[in-house]
Image (cartoon, rainbow over the protein chains, first blue to last red):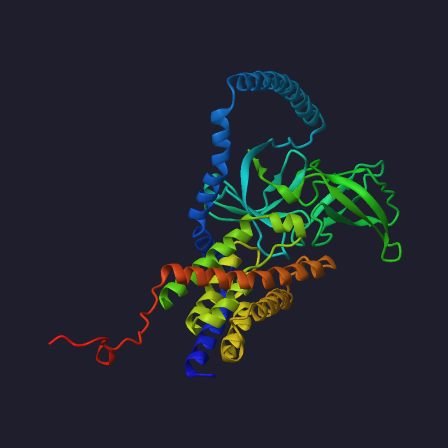
Length: 268
Length: 185
């Protein structure tokens, strides 16, 4: 039953596991990238398969429908152009006022659109992979969001892909601010493994008067996430640790369960 | 056929890991992703040799970790810890019976995530755990249990389709042929 060959196999596998686990983090990251790149042909195949139905649909879409859509997009574009002009004027005024007060000028941010390609196969992490990497200018800790709100931050960067750690994962803690009169601040952290739409807002002061429905945004403290990105809304709150702190549950604005496209906030 | 079977097992592991990372259906419906590698390991332990079991543990684990936030190499030992004892005891296991396959698949799918999480906690990592993890564990166990006989059927089908069957010996012997009627002179 227990032949010498089996002993050798046991030894080799155990040794390989120990060796790989004890590799330095830089080597591990490179090895992970190399192994992950083996899946690239399958990514391409999946992308082409997903594209096929929409291509087929586009080829049979009536001309009248397309013209109507173009008309709608033109109108929307004009509205956005007007909005952009208004925003530019506001930004200029903001810069002038900051200059008068002697405050540091705010750096403008640039967005990069990325597609979510995979989700973490393990149930105990909440991460996704996007199709932008170091060749596209991605670096660790860049904020990732959707038009609804914050999604997470870039955790590790490969040449063509990056791993994004989502809000609600134990490794992604966000300094948050409740938009109430007292401007209470806390830390948004993991809630539970099942519901990805909820997160816990911890370390609010014991006297914080947070109420359901109040909006939670990033506080800007910590330097990773800029101030004012929507995080979600308070669901309920209560005292913890014998009233020393207040803890609240937050319904996240971004739908983390069905992420397809995300925006990466890159400094200009 | 042995080589082909080994290649098929490793190819299946590769596709299974990719499918787990791309297909979000079970996660949306059941709240947990089903891991197919333990079920595949049961097939490998019962039907292939120790080399394939070892290769599946190493490469399956590495592929899984490469698409996950796990430390690289974490899944190797849990997979091997399940496959190796079953491989050693496989002569005593009624591997042809679907019931045995379901039970073994369930046990493997329950043990692998437990060992992985234990290793993570031992390494000082903080995985996302809570009461909901119990439900995820049940889903993973049930999913793995159901996937095991599917793998057995799938590989049997592949073997029938791609492998050659050995020529069976017929009972016909020309020297024992009985001629009826009179022999012509």
